[in-house]
Image 1 (tube, rainbow over the protein chains, first blue to last red):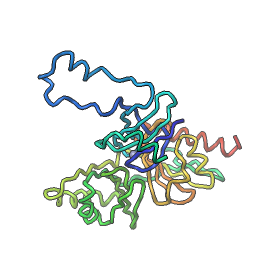
Image 2 (image 1 turned 45 degrees about the vertical axis):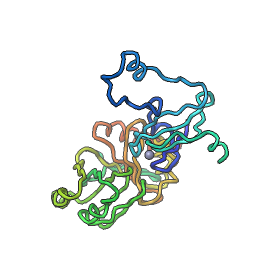
Image 3 (image 1 turned 90 degrees about the horizontal axis):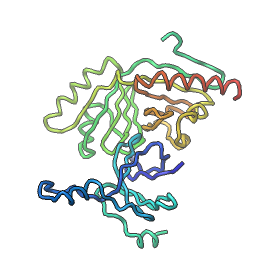
Image 4 (image 1 turned 180 degrees about the vertical axis):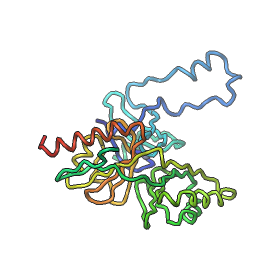
Length: 99
Length: 176
Ligand SMILES: [Zn+2]
């Protein structure tokens, strides 16, 4: 079972307490009616589907209830880090230097 | 309930009497207002609890608390919070009847809970509480002592959670 660190609870807990919630850092357009159909389609459906380090949303649904973001390697399933919603995506080089 | 207690040498499963229960959401900066209204200093770290007499408070999210009190005090607590609502925004929801409480006591309490709880129970502090899952049902898990726990579960999940605990307690007793 995966262990995930919740940045709000500051605790590392089993995956069963969490729910996946898709790619992170996708801003909802401020004025959707100004978008072309293609732009709206891209916002709704087009994702990077990266092979490697992926920024994604998780929710600690059976815990504190909060959404937060994680960097996970989609090849190894390893969580590199988690961070609170609203914070910028951590820089990979800073992360690697910290290890 | 015909047989609210299933007791063996090493662990007992008991359906506990009802209690006044509240879910409180309030900005952490306003916590002192809530503490004054409830008459107990609310803990600030997720997982921590505070007790005084029959009142208890558990921090279960960055801005969320579970409050316990005697059933007879329920209306007085609702009134105390209503009195500060105009100046301090918060939400206080009475959830006394939403959940039922199961007591789990005895040397095998940890082993019994591990049947359905995926977390490392030894890290849950005494006096603390945590929202988690028990065999896919969301529960509040409260630790009262080294080998004494309470599980609060929504009514519709109660037959499943309680039934599983009873079966597992029997299995522990016969050494399975
Ligand atoms: Zn959390």
